[in-house]
Image (tube, rainbow, N blue to C red; front, side, top):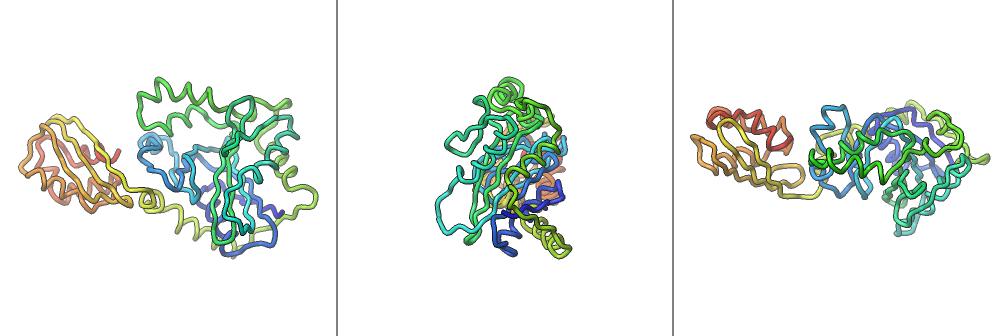
Length: 326
């Protein structure tokens, strides 16, 4: 096994590093990474971002949204948690979680934390989740990565991953507290987050493991991959499945309901109904939205360009855009 210190808390850099050592610079042994990020929502490969995260909350709290190359559900992570990655050659087509979670369970056990695999893709302590994993293939290489809740902000986790604000207040935060827990609470002897990392890496790597130091060439290419593959708007929103969505806004000039068909992050069809007043026909309102990215700034620009901020009575383009793509 070869351990690589990523040296970064930028999620796109770390995803770029995974891709680099899986595709462009495969090493002869299993690559092992142990890294963390600034507050981030990692959306699964096949998920609809709008159904999984509260984008307005994320923007207000400086939480980054990215899309993983692996399937599974959305996870929230911050500097109070860790991510681990294994990259290795694998000719088989099946997905194996336990193979990669076994060394993590053993390392936690060395620290006095009794974790158990739940049979799907999670690790539990005292019946509560401390880790989720996902896996994907790049050619003949398998990339397995997972999260470890050490001292994560669980309230922010609940708020950021719940679209409906009423659920945040009534159910989600309580539900998250009941279903998940931080590893720090279960340590027989307290330790800080860096000491936890050192212990986990030392146990998983073992005495026969090696370490690889990133070169300037490595870092330059990893940074480029992070930008190209993970940090753009398209990488987050245009990779998800197509979907239909209905959004309603209530304004001084009346209510407006926007029925949208979105594919690859772009509004393909749109219809607008409501009790508002406008100098335009309904189909003209919908046509103004068709072809623009399903993102608030892009929507506002499209509406302004078509003059809808003047054509609709007492409703500005900014207000419509907020209702459509908040």
